[in-house]
Figure 1 (cartoon, rainbow, N blue to C red):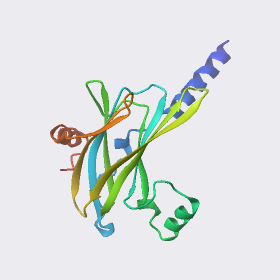
Figure 2 (figure 1 turned 45 degrees about the vertical axis):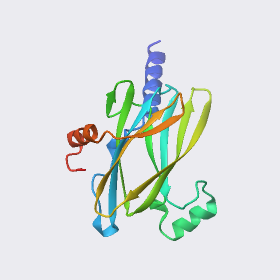
Figure 3 (figure 1 turned 30 degrees about the horizontal axis):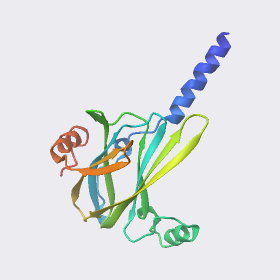
Length: 189
């Protein structure tokens, strides 16, 4: 009986570790490389009415002008031209508590550090996992952003109301300045 209990605890611990995704702020880049002509966009993502089975929410962004759907030919072309790394990216919010909670929403800090240019959020992907069934829900969006060399710009709060399928961009700059200063005092906007 004791061996079975130990095996169950070990299995549960491993499952918990595999299922956890770090906060976006835990791997956030906090500086710009002037040799790469980088700039920074900062903001927050908030999720309301979050489903417990949603393992992750991926907020996908890309360089403006690139297609939303990737083909192997396009990927190969971007890699050959050494621009793949800055072409398509995601901010992934796992099934965890945010950096802070406000009312009924979990709020996550993020930064995007890329070479100067025009980019856009083009899709939100929600991965659902019930344990025996998995599915993905994609929500196309269009939210342009511009990164300026050597500058830190505030985007706002990207607010996703899951039940309504509604996305809003809110201005909470004063609140976000305080939250960034607490966790990342070197980032000023």
